Length: 202
Image (cartoon, rainbow, N blue to C red; front, side):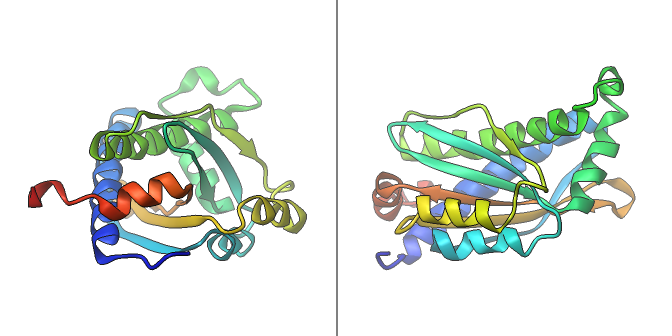
């Protein structure tokens, strides 16, 4: 992977943080509680290296969203077993109509993925002036997110640039969930990011 410039890191940080802040607003509306973003972090590296984090997560539920349009990519939203249960328990109180649906956990996790990934992808689109969209997310259950599955994902994403984004979504009463994203971005993303100036510097 090419050297990651300070400018790339600054632009990416601005884009992701704005995306997360908008996602927290959507989370607040859906949950009926004030949700804040805390401990926001970004890590940059080779896709195979960052993907290894998934197998270190206890019983992970993984939501995969393809990024399509003028630039290609893929996001992996990863919930630990604890966080997947916690966010489902919170939101099912507001989505009573789903209680009788045996797939309510998948539906809720996909809704969270839609909120966060869409917010970040929209920021990418706006700030980088790229026509890109998120496809329908695909759910990988804990029993399927095994070493063989991960090996296949790593093989498919060799020599790719990746960003890991993480933050705490802090609810009222000091409750929080800590899912993380791994974003696999193709060369077009990298080229645009690496030459983009911060909007406030223009």
